[in-house]
Length: 452
Image (tube, rainbow, N blue to C red):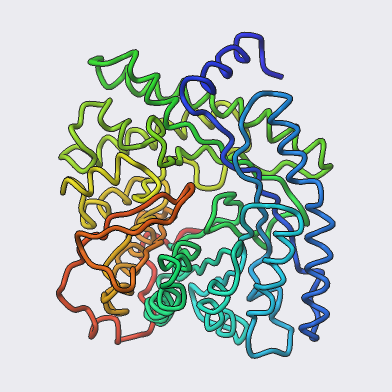
């Protein structure tokens, strides 16, 4: 239970600093829905999702009203469909995506993740079917999110998959060009994907998880910024201690919501993901934290050091507050979802190359970045390969969620709306990597991966 003082502090963080529970995500295993008949499989997954999650949205709303803590999103993640549907006799899984979409709308959640494949070492027939289905699936659904894991620190990088995903992203952009290429905003390419991530678009319910579980993602960039305002000009030790203490308080509030949701839904509590996930709102920005630390703009020299410090101390504070911190806990650095990052990009302070350097120490990777629509698929694959290499060598999760905006170029912008915000089109290195990507095969794991 929270103490009286913690309740007062939590209410203050909510009212003054945009503290919220960004998502309650229910993970649901679809392994027991397996069937060789695609129609029966679809019916089984619809029935299970709508049964398990029938009270998810209402519970989140009830908790928000009772405790006064905003619960922004209610979401579902499922077993990677390439695994769950592997026994189906089908040449496309688009109908499965449509079933997931229908189930999500029936229970009222914001998104459903898990139209996914784990192909870091190679592809099964089910993986191939799923990957080929992604562009159409994202075009014909509203709530479905997709992810593909192409590498791990233990297994290296599947470069055949990297090459294919560059093509898939361009295809998804083309199929949704009348909607700002929104299909790509629902597609993430991972290295070292985690099984308990509650955040979209990369959430899926890992095969090592329970049949059903509640994972909660808490977000509070505004709370951290407000706390740092109180120690302006102090040394780095004071700054780090302030971030740790603030992360502790945020995590405590999230754990209260997670445990209460678990109790009311009679579903086991999984993890708290303490990720500083920004929104387009003023005062809810990672870039504003950098400015409070003393940087003129995100992207200025010192930005990577500032992000490393922020990420590390967010994790330290969160781990002290809960025994079940997981997911991708740290700091996200999306462009379109953070007004400060958008402004830094528009001013020329933040480039794609600087963002890549920052991903060495952030929570995930290149996130919600818009690029010219005429960017070649091989260049997109090269960007994915670079990001996967950072994850593989540094034994961390990295990802790419990139949007080639068909018909637009550098100097223009694209509007997504809602939490996704808008993004300026960023320039991409014009030199080709086509022959490099065309090699295919697999980049072996680094030498330090061989631990046992």
